[in-house]
Length: 528
Ligand code: HEM
Image 1 (cartoon, protein in one colour):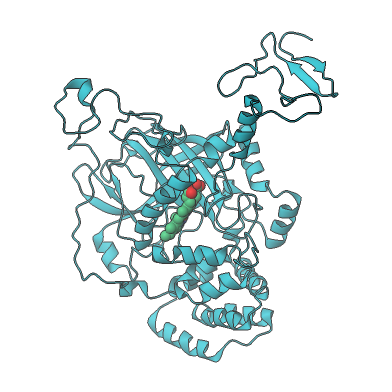
Image 2 (cartoon, helix red, strand yellow):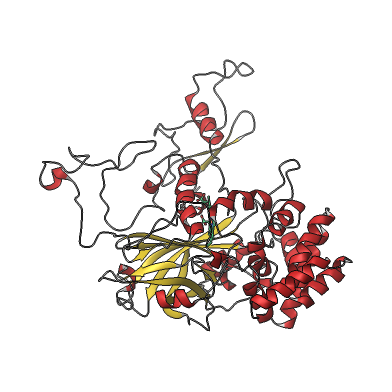
């Protein structure tokens, strides 16, 4: 053997031993103790019992036994890559966010795409919403834009999220289907939640079976706020537009691809980046003020509605390029923790009740998923800018405060005293007024669930409309309970008569009569 190749030896049981030497590293235990034999446990006699004192075996097996961590409660199956965001059109008039101040400046990013409902091992081409989460490692902290490839959502209030996800995932008694919307519980729930109808139109459209991650749009969904250096705020919606174009597959293609290669989407991203064909997205913003918000027929805090691009054009302010695959899937893709509450000075929340619930949920779940409060110490989650705080201890603490002070205010000067507040450039919440009676009520502006569903359906080409009808027929044909199918069907005339007719015919059913009366009511209320 030449230097650099392991030496080989065959053991007494016929097993292969490869030994270190030259520049081949010596295997050690996790404690750094050199290992002499990695094939045989320590036994009392060749056929005798294994010995407790075999610390190499015990350490190796103990660690293996603990390799699994909980998968994400949603978006379990995902794939990620590194890259950068480049500011093309600085917007200091709109926001003081550091990453948007200087033309041509690049900010490192980590971007994870995902399906929502399927388990970690499910197939890539499921009909499902896709997650599109981007962590920007800015000079003033990490900003996470945790979006989807569809600009609206199923529900208006975070209170219903556990129900939505329970209904969408496997049914609790039978444990199937996984990663499929086509089952009674899902359609039962959404048929009882008219607010889901806009999202259902998108989820039944070709958008829900993308050709690959590289051909998807992304959306922040909620209305956020930009805040400039003077403290002036405006509303903002975020958009990712793929330079590769927008492409989907048909359902038949999706089925074949899932069968032939359930890893199709992750392989596509890996192959593209490894061959130097770096995928790219433009980041666009729709910015509007209170006056527009007040004149908009829906509530801008309602995540089941979008702001039409005809009303507020999308302004491109930068681009994201993904140019590096991960070194390690678990360390990076699995352990990354995106969190909607990770905002930076210049970006703020609105009172969207879905967004506010998310701000609690992500941090909460990650404490469990990543084993304690110190998951920001994992390199993929750590800021790339300087950071100093007095948080300490807990499981897996890697960076405790240095020196004597672990509190403030304190009497210690200089480095001993630790970090101090920055009233001028630290994060400040937008000053807003809140008034009202404490109650569990929703604004009336949240109440129209059909007109944007209709707008979306009518904006589709004839072929795309046919795909929506076919998807609904396919999905509802898997529903065993007739009453659920009927209830869902009864929503469709509120969206479009031809669609309702096509689905009813496909299912061999009649459109329920009360649905027609409801349609007339909606026609009187909304314009198409
Ligand atoms: C992941 C909760 C709505 C996009 C997650 C996770 C939770 C969660 C608990 C797993 C996080 C983890 O383990 O790291 C919620 C709640 C919602 C909600 C409570 C509504 C109240 C949304 C919406 C979007 C979205 C509206 C899109 C705008 C994502 C994405 C991920 C995710 C992209 C995966 C992040 C990753 O790649 O690690 N969500 N979610 N979620 N959610 Fe949501």
